[in-house]
Image (tube, rainbow, N blue to C red; front, side):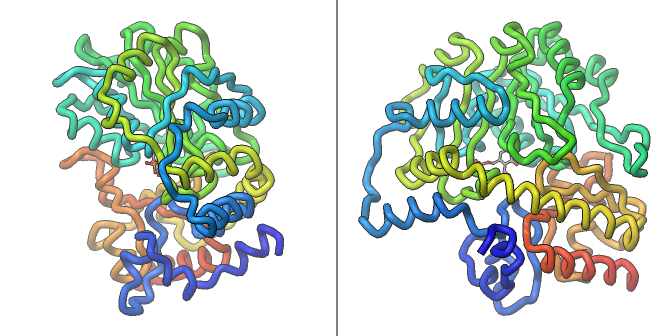
Length: 403
Ligand SMILES: Cc1ncc(COP(=O)(O)O)c(C=O)c1O
């Protein structure tokens, strides 16, 4: 079966039997809920990854492994990034971690002191906010805003540079950049990133660039690696990425940091060894297989997702015109601004109760008590078969029509 045929053949009863919490949280006792929330894809993983994991398990080859820096994983990662993104990553600049969340916390701890400011562009993937509040740093919020409508009738999210300039103060130390941006679906353009770089240089900020979705960019858009904007930019940047989003391996944990300067890397290396924690053998070998042999699978997966995104955009325009959305340039996470629908409760609660569709709660994408009304927005994960996606949005449309 081709990759597309495998994806088309997904069956709800098989997915509902999975133990991962995307499905298990909402499908207990035959609830009939369709989950479209956390960022796991429903798709089977690439054959080379299945093969290596199966082989490790069959041979009980599940013991301690060398830290991934010691083998050829840094070179393999570097080769993939050079080929796909034109990004040169020297192996000595890489440090591996168990997951990207650990990287977010560590970068905030290293990049800003207690009480110092950290810039975050909201709505944002919630752990960014938790990394700031959990480490006692100060949130410097910069809400994204809708730009002018494009030819497609959709207005993309844009950075508010004037607000950013006015908000960054002398005690601001760190800029947490998410590119591609979760949940807006933006793939920031080079000129937008240059504006961030200019601000970072002017205010002497460290930039934490979370580029975990860097290979999930749709045709017509191009991922620009932030640190490649120039030497002055690179030396103040820590990049976080992994194979887990592109290749759907969140349970086989491995992530990495790329340090733009030796100074930043040294600060990191001074942390106690076991705070850093190494990924296990399954994560290491799965990432090796993904970056070495997963390319053809990923090309087909992005093409499939691109079809889903086109379907979704068209469906929402026709059947749920009250929802503001898109254009989706990257990632399979789609922000739905339902403020115009006047729903009787928070958007995610409404769709769970009335449509049996589990989405992410928009409120979590901003700070508590935000006046921006994110609770009336929600995030939909469209990385599932077209048939299941159709069922999800049909249910949502029916719920709104009957509200
Ligand atoms: C922007 C972003 N960063 C980090 C993560 C988490 O990655 P990990 O599973 O490696 O912790 C996600 C997961 O969805 C994400 O969207």
